[in-house]
Length: 452
Length: 36
Image (cartoon, rainbow over all chains, first blue to last red):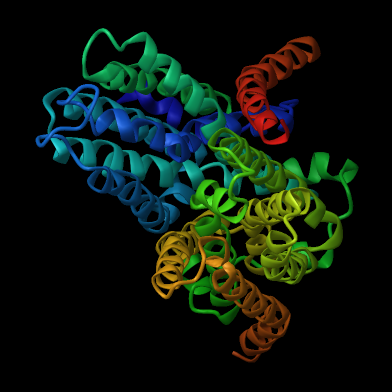
């Protein structure tokens, strides 16, 4: 047990002279690793041909069955972030990051055995359940620490970490493809050895974050903060526990905002490739569509850093107002740009939409800090992430089913997304109304608290 | 102390920056197909 005592919170307090700029790379090491989840789809086809080889046979798992592995992982991300949020606050970032590394990497190893033995339950438990818990723990573990280290720029600090979650897939996708090619001669299309290598590599990379992360000393504010930017009134909000926060109206307004913003973005992100090919038939090839998807991933990642950093200057409310109003206008204009056959406008519009989708994820921890203080902001953030799980179901369902319904009614494929785009625009307008009411709800909550 | 702190900073940012830059480059390369 004593070998693991370095994980305890008291051993993670920063010594005098420790640079706070060492904390973002520690957080990035975790988020770049768990961001691999967005690249899981590169394994779908190889896993669906484990028995058949070149083609799927009767004994192989169907693609729709394999799709459950990613869905279960995202559900467990939301659930574990909500359930373990308070534990993460109590034990500190180092122990939480270590637990995340063990679960995430362990999930890969269990999945490797599952693929080797062709046992779907093992694959589902390994990557979906165990890996999903690692995702949830890893996602929230650095947030609270970063906010405490950067009271002057909480948006930039959390944006930097959460940007890693968007960037993780960019590393994992080509890396996994290369590893599978390298191990193809061994067995199972190289999937099992690739899982094993990724499990070990991610564990080592995450351990860099574990040993590097530090929490600020209690007197750090008094010593170093004088040189930092002035702290605004909103940033001195009182601290609420997670239990107290979820009983307030501002929490649920933010929950709805995150859910709506993610619903609009996630559905489109999943359908980006067929969408651009169907809206520009004969012009956009499959390779060009793949390039479009890559561009959207870049916008998603960049938006996480740029928008959340900007929110430190223009405020969280103004940032979200921009997401919702500008986003609604862009969604509503997409069918028109499609009809105009203007690919540059279409791509530009989607790049902005995806940057705001990422920005919505990255700016929310700082918004929570403004409203509920730093006391249990990580745990509150964890509970808010259940909105992500909800949106993960809502977004694709809205896009896919409305498209199928439209096509069944005889609408041409190029126009099948029109209604969906207008619905997304309406969702964002609802989000704008929620955001507009946050200040009023917060003022009412404070008045009630003062009276009590 | 200052030097070792600076070295740690450079090493830490390099360790996360290099893989991220490699990943971004892979995506940028693929995205060029859109404009060809």
